Every structure is written in structure tokens, then in C-alpha cells.
Image 1: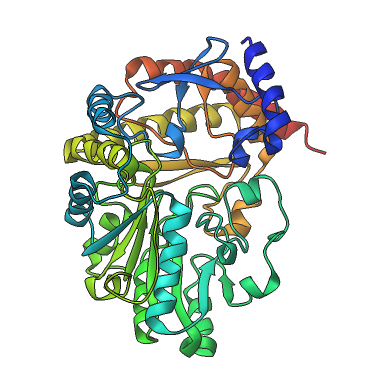
Image 2 (image 1 turned 120 degrees about the vertical axis):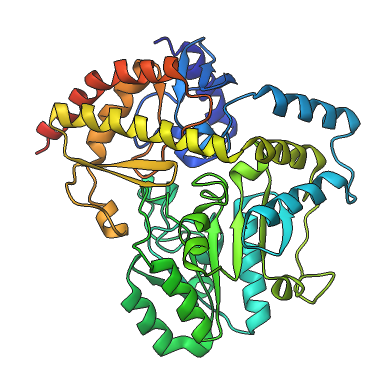
Length: 438
């Protein structure tokens, strides 16, 4: 495929932006080659600056649940823009979006913000303000945005780029962060036994999707809720990625709702913005009432609850019916089967792991991956070869072995046919990469 225009744009970008991108994983450093600069998206397809078309399994990293440029979302946004792009005042769409979130999830009260990082940062501040404690428990491989205290052993771009530690974050900032192995209840019990009276909260991705998809072991999230409660700490479930994506009510629908427990605080993002910068955090009303102006914990945002973003998110959620999730899961299962069959046929060791509609491939391993250490044992060279072959054949995948694949309601038979036809060559490219290992 021609990449002249993308290469030219990348060269221009590197002159004015660090690494030529505005989010590190977009730079293709883990997979090689030229990042594709996209000019448009429609349904399940992206078109780049050179006119190449791709079936998209990134979906803007999750938000495009309905597919790109869904006509009803576009129409609603156009009407909202015509009324004004930002007021700096309350507006009805932000109320309606908050009502929709409350109706679908365990939270009773919601504060809207503009990014997932801001949501987790604010939830952390609230937990500390409510409990009067400083320590935070997090898990290796879980990514909660680029919050200073939560970048310790984070997944996502930190592991993709092989960045050691957290440069730029003073040691005292992470001194109160306790990092534990994921899916290890005994380690959580031990940490609370030693520091229980000092721990404000335990935070986890509801189903980690930033070290590849590593689902929680049965009962793990329930144990976190129980242990935190027993020690007077709060349990924060980060559903920025999984919220309204893994299932209609987020990953909580797959465990907490069935098991009869709920997190104290939850963070949301991605799908709830419908492709616009929008996120939220929420929880029990008594906790949320500690936020200004109702309480003393300060948090604010000039563009929080932006009327265009909230309109896009509200329209997306209203279109995301139970039937849509049934179809989305069926599509996800079909894609997993196609990928698995191709890799098996080429003799590529792998494990496909999922949480609801979300999934990823673990490369060069044969046993399920349950934690960050296991995820880091992946053969990233095999993935890079697979990625490059798929890209050349018109399939756009997350450019990292440590990221999740996303399908949309727009992935129809034509899109899946393109995927199916590209898989054999890509699977054999991965097999050759494995054979070439020293």
C-alpha cells in the first residue's frame, strides 16, 4: 500500500510534536513502519491520507461501539454544534448523560470530566479526602491514565515502549503507592494486614485491557470489594475501557451485578463520549457528596460536561441496546474464532483472552495469562510480523501486543471477509518470526 502522504505527514509532525504523535502508541515504535494518518472513518472502515482503506479493530481504542460516523450520532452532534460548542454553564445534555450512566450501572451520583486520566485522578483524590488516608493499592499491568502516582508498573504505552519506571515522577509521589501482582488475593490480604489503617483505596481495571486482555479470576473483584470494606478503605473500579463496552453495564454486569456487590467508586470514559473527549467518575451518593460544591474535596473542569461531547455520548448509549450487545458479542466471538483458526493452522502458539465483547491475543504462550509477568512473556516480534502483514492487507489492528481488540456494530460480513482473507498470510508471517528467534 502507498504510504507517501502518511510518511510526509509523519515527518512534518516530528518537527513540531514529540515523536510525531500526541499519544505514544500511535508512533508504531513497537511494530515498525510508518504510522497511518487517517482522514476519515465510516462504519467499520478507516481511510488514510494515501486513500488506503482498512477494516478497523481499534475503534479509537474502544469508543466507536456503533462504528465510525454513525448517522444518528453525527446528526445529533451537528444539531448540538449549531446551538453552541461550549457554554461554561450547566446544560441539559450533561444531566441526561449522567442519568443514563446511573440507570445502567451501580453508581448513584456522577461527576463528568474530560479524560480517563482526569477521572481516575479525581477518584483517587476523593478516596483520600473521604478516608483521610494516603496509601493506594494498585496492580502491576493495570493502566489508569498518566496519573503520577499510578504510573508505577503500568501497562499500555509504558510497557509497549519499554519505559523503565516512571521518569518525571518524583519518588515521594509514588511512595504511597503499593503495587501488587494482579489476581493475587493473598498479596492483597497481606498488604492490608500490614498497612490497612493507612490505605485509602484499592484501584483496579475491572478487566485489565492494557497488558493485553487479562480477565479477573472468578471472585477476584469481589474479594477486593470485601477486603477494602473490612479495612475502612474504598474500592475503585476503573471502567474507562470496559464501561459500556464489555457489556451494557460495563464489566460490573459480568461479575458484581451477578454476585451482589458494587464498587464504592467507578471511573468511566471512551464509549460514554461517543468519540469525543468525555469521561466520568461516580459512586455512592454519600461519597460523591464530599466533592465541591457539596463538600470540601475540590475538583473542577472548564470543559467538563461539554454539550457537544455529552450529546455524542448520550446518543451512543441510547443506541446501545441490549440487542446490540448480543450482536456485538456474536461478532467478537466470530472474530476470535477466525483469528484462532488461522494461528492454529500456521502453528503459532497463542492464547485468546476475553472479557465480554473485548479480547486480545497473547503471542507465543500456551497457558492463560493471569498477571503482568505472564503478559510480558509474550513474543512481541511475532505480533509485529502479524501486524505488518495485516496492515498491508487492509486490516488495522492495535499497534501493540499489549492492547485490546475492539469490534463494533458496523463490522458486517464484508469487513469480516477482509479479515478472514488477510489472516492466513499474517499468521504465517508470525510463524516465521517465531522460527527466526535466536
